[in-house]
Amino acid sequence: MFLIKNKFRMKKNVFFSLFMLLSVNVLSAQIVVLNPVKVEQEDIKQFLDIEMNYSKKIAQNAVKNNKLVGWALLQSTNLGPDDYNFMWVNIYPDIETAANNKAWWNNSEEVLGLKPDILFSNNSKYKFDRSYTYKMEMSIPNTGPAAYVLLNFATPDDVDVVSKEIKKYVVPHFKKKMNENGMVGWGMATKITPQGEDYSSLMFYDSYDSLANVMKHLAGDSVIKGLPMDKLSKINWEMRPIMKVISSTTAKK
Image 1: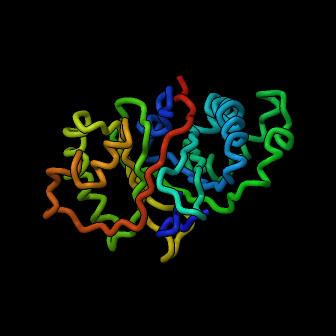
Image 2 (image 1 turned 120 degrees about the vertical axis):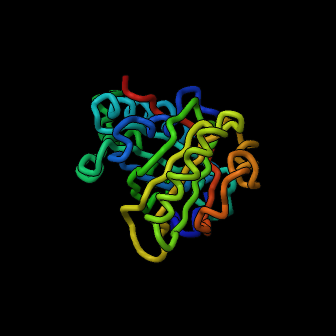
């Protein structure tokens, strides 16, 4: 799929986006697994039909039964010719569930009356050969549904120092400025696996209500404007894909 360091080429959701689910009280225990997938142009229509009309229902059942906190399908907006164009995101309540959980999508027969080998018979056409697992560390609770999510990957020299700076300076600033700039959520997570010099150790997400507001963020405007840069360690971003939220589960009531 992609190396988180520098090789990820990746309708507005009518429900609260996946990232709304990252604002629950047990945030620090949540595990986020990113699974990039490449779907050829001629297969996209069928892929989306299965994901939006079937996979989502199975995932929602997994949320109901505490096997997942949430699930989402994202689509890349800045795609190269050989890039992975979609991403599955699974959020687990804790590391034990993430590590030991049986594939929730294999429950399709119980939920939909369709055997998984029939429902997902076209999966062999898609390329999904790796996953990236993160532990959520902090977030700003979402204020509404996200249409786009900016994923930011980096490997700072000292994660602990950066985390303290982010908590002290960035989080309060974002909370103050986000509503007027279309930001609807934010979070930071640390990498669990894979690890090594080719893989980013930190992931931040910025959820926005429009693509235009994401672009303003990247241009140094929006919530970025006014940050005390002199008090923040410089972060060299290794990759910053913009993802469109295609579909997601809703939080368990």
